[in-house]
Length: 403
Image (cartoon, rainbow, N blue to C red; front, top):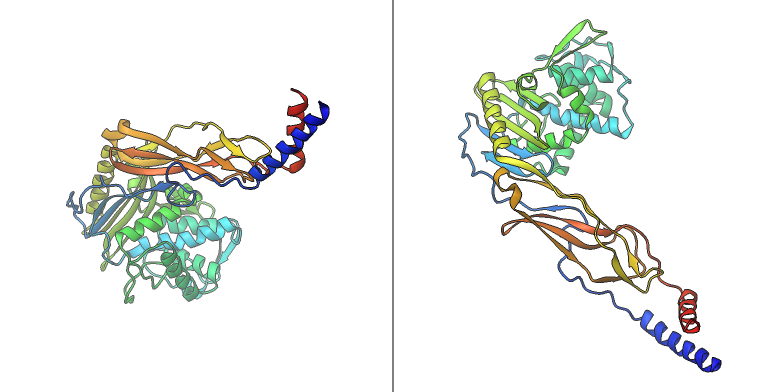
């Protein structure tokens, strides 16, 4: 009798080995995420029609900062002179240097003759003067100082030509298709082709505010440098007078007219508003206020409820199941349709070992009517090794002997 059990165990083991080595990877029950494991947010079909608000400016854009979704556009892709809004790209390269550790806020920045010669908005730097990176940064963000912008650019890249080349390389990398920079300040008296578009400004503004430190300065109404002896007042009046405003950058020249990129947040919705080519400062600020008010009145931020999916079955693994996790998801939707979002889970029935943590096994799809707002991947949260022959033998033998 005992011999028969052993022979049966061997036979069963051989069958299991054959099955174990020939298990196919099950096909997904439904389609997987569209972008290889990252959150997928599709273009929304409920954005306002081009120029619907008829703003008093040459071009404008309203963008959701979280997803990059454009909610309103007016002549948004025309290349126009941006004046000091240019400095958003200058600040982006400086913040990248700071966040990478190659530049510290406490580092001393020396002023070259070239930097000291800059006209327009300035903090009156003198050749040979030394100022901390933080004070230089505040001077650019708050007071739009051209001399400080050039001093920072030269310090980061070695010379201004190299820095401008990096500005254009970064613009290309961000997908800014209608932009060409010739300097780090936006001064355009002698510039021939220093141009960008409202959409491109929104794109680089979004990239800049991902560096959260910048908001510590752009949201200030007043500050000072030189040990408190030189006062700074923000050129962006909306920081003081618009509820929720956090920045970002103004600009004006005879060629550009009056321009601004404003960032603001209310109730979890973060917006970027760009106005280009307004006739004067008051019109610029009024149109930015109007566009932001429209955005906050008509749109809301949606954050998907958090949950833990049930474990997935594992074939041929040390464990017969694997824990899963859901990637957080958020998007922007019309405020009056927030309660109409539906959630659908698309998940494989099983997965074959070996399994690495972070493997996509399905997705959760978020829809508003027939419109797919986006999807978030469902991934494994642990490793599951392929079962060894020894473990398989022990399982089978234990099961037989315990009968």
